[in-house]
Length: 490
Image (cartoon, rainbow, N blue to C red; front, side, top):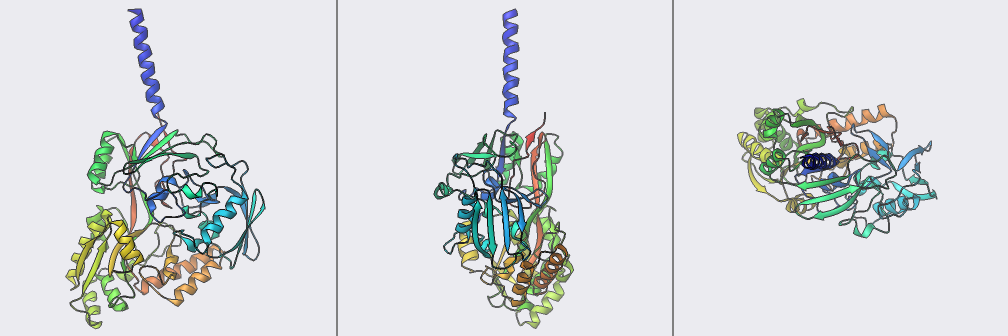
């Protein structure tokens, strides 16, 4: 009996120890699988959702509140003329392959990003760089062609992370960064696995390992959460089930905001959308709240311009494009465009597919017929984003504070305004926070008055997590599942 009791106690202790050990790992659900794992050579948000702040780091980084904080650079100085930034790097930083990270790697990474043949998806972030110089192993001097008060902000993007020349050729499938987690495995079509970097230069994360599990079907995502196969789903694809999770004490429902301006994008160079009256008519045909309720089950904040409502510089311009179907019909008649038919191209996300059906109905009510095409992401990228072969499309722009895309005439919605481009140039030359806020307000108003796109809603961040998990981001100031502060409670 005594021996059997000892065995039982030992078994319980082993079981408890195993359960305790499991609490330093986490499985994160994601809707989309990244096409590769190199944030410096791909536009897909899913790349950063896996590697940002976890595997790769930049000179600066975004905090959970959207602030720009030190990362590989512990501090930086700005010259009086605003043309020279001097970054002071942390000492003792190593890449996951054991090589040192120093000023030479910063020079290599930034020169690669702004090179003529760069494949960086956000090459515009680096356009003003004139030279990058390693002053010493821990000091980098960056000279700009014109002052840019947004430069530390630009360096916080996932596209600006620092990579090693020794490993850069294989980053897409075997990413080697400086972050608190190392890449371990990628089972394509299923999951990516990370493990803790025990040689990390900064504060060690509480988690020993993390798995990113790809589940695109909303019903499967719900089942995985309920079964405990997934510990957290930071961007949960089935908002209609959130009330059920709220009623279950095993879970926390985490609702916040994202940088995702969800828009009905219009091809500004394609007739008749090159006529501002037609674009305004479409804007007034849209009932934003009906879309938020019908496509997002009430989760989302109406917007009237391309700017996040949680940003201090936001201007509420929803009244400028208020739902007014009679005005819409009047504008179409004035433009000679009664009986209009337009092509509506929809990418895979549920906000686009569900929202597209609602918008098609709203446009039909004012006399505009739509031909809907449901595209996969690869098709959407080729035909809409690159080919500009579309009339209307719905997409969430999840990059942080990206109103400057309206200064790019070759961008997919093809808005070409010299006044707006001059305004963005002025913003880049301005470092005073209040002056920058005023310019951003003017920019928001300009694109709203030009009815460049139909501004629908700010994408909500609706997440579900095991109630014992703490430290997940409530908001998404960038496309990331930052695990550096995540842990389990008892």
